[in-house]
Image (cartoon, rainbow, N blue to C red; front, top):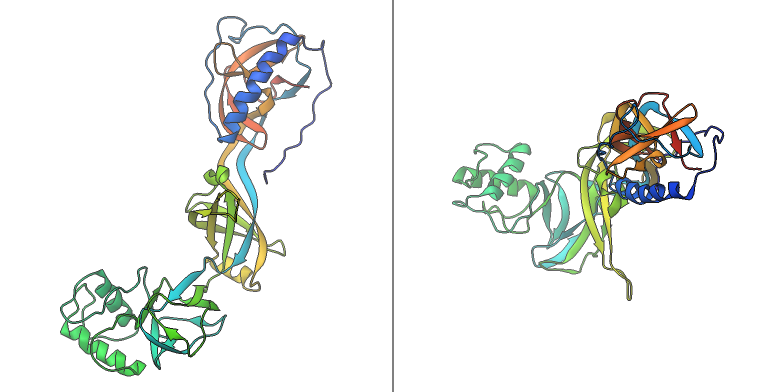
Length: 376
């Protein structure tokens, strides 16, 4: 699914057709290797018993086709379609009672210290932080929420207090100055609901209320995203190994411009399904385009389909054979059938990365150009 296909040319058929007894190991390996490839497998073959110069047993007949061991860079990749936009959508809910008197418009961008929306004529101000408010703040309060608010107050240019986890009288004095600036009563107490926290600047995605409607704790007011461009990709759970936080990916934009970015978030999403439908599980990957080159390249697009290339593993200059060349050995593990002149023998191998229908191999007598058997 989305993986690169490697084309190869098979040599002409040589030798006699395979006998029926030669098909049993091939069936066995088809099942065993299929399980390994599904898991992105790495396996080690057990040694063969005695026989042959290479330590393997002679085959009763030559294989129907052959190919050569190749040296190449093997990449375990997956290409998927993603959506360029502004990343995950979040919901802002009211924490106060009153009447909604002013709301932003979809597409508006709002930064720290500015009004997100208005209740009873007073602003609800955006601040930056990873957690929401849960209590009013006043002199004597201590905690991480105090430090978070003080850090924002300091970033807005207010001073005369120490940014720590204690709400002091100096903090209250700075708050009074801030309250005067935003046009609310100068109490020195930060009431619950006066501040709304987001991880950074926000872009209003949609408004879910209208001016004049009542505001109440828990009421959805608007939805928002970040202001930076991001790509969102949905993967099947079987492909989750492809998406690791911090891993590099390549994003191809609509005009075939390629930019490199990193995976920022990997989330498992469960869709309960409609009536009489089974729930489904997907893996949602978020990739922020926050480098200078990526920002510039994506600036001309609002919403667009893009291609994303994930790489789970890479091995440079390794020996490879088609996965179909692997044979299950009776003593356990895997081997390949090495063909020399008019004879062939089974040679045990260690397997590494599986990708693009090929597998990394190593073992005694295995070198670039070694001729090995493959099914017809």
